[in-house]
Image (tube, rainbow, N blue to C red; front, side, top):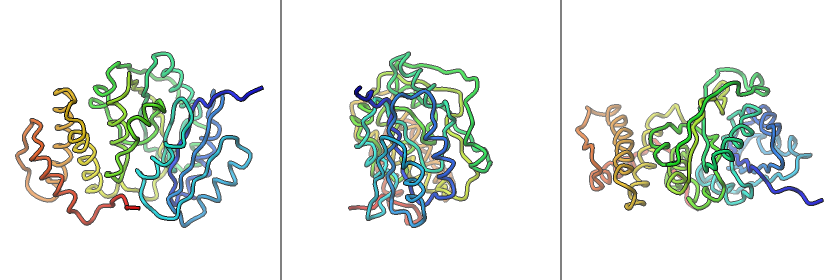
Length: 298
């Protein structure tokens, strides 16, 4: 009997997360209700035992790809490397310190198929707990909203972590993350929403964040930089988007710049209307920063 098609591809970027990986993998490899998932791990030249842990814990699991690299290039580049390998109808992405409730993918997939939605996302919560305490969690009760206009839902919602379920064909059409932006959290949903037919927002915590030992969120300037650039490039690359979308994108970009400006100087006056020359000046200011991480060239 031939094997059923892959229903969900899980794509995980990996960089020095040996403390979290045993629990992350315990939850990931036991996601309920899936017929034939695949697991794609893309390592960005970890110097710890991350890859060894993945190899050991997946040695008896079908449909596993472990991709290693010779040069550290950053999260956006590596998530795109995994996306290119995905063969499932849907793809769900995660960082190597994100823990999925055991039934979260099953519930997200059910909603996607019910509404024929290209994107499904939910909430996350910082638990402050050791990762071992989160390996066997379930979603519990939740509500959700469906919007046939995916871009409208994304621009009125919050995408602050990984964990979205996105139709793989849409993800590939959108070309995944914007590699000009180091952190991918904002650019993936933005770019996909421009191509997607329908999105769903769940009230459930579909990502559980364990006790944090340190991550990029400690550098607030990095977050301002990456958020601004994600929205700036979305505006610059898509001049034919409807004006309501341009205004919302501009609002998000200006908000990121305002937060950065407030940290470093007095509050500026910023136009509420899309003004590409003004946004380019803001972009140049961000690109001149020396205390943020950038995607590394080949």
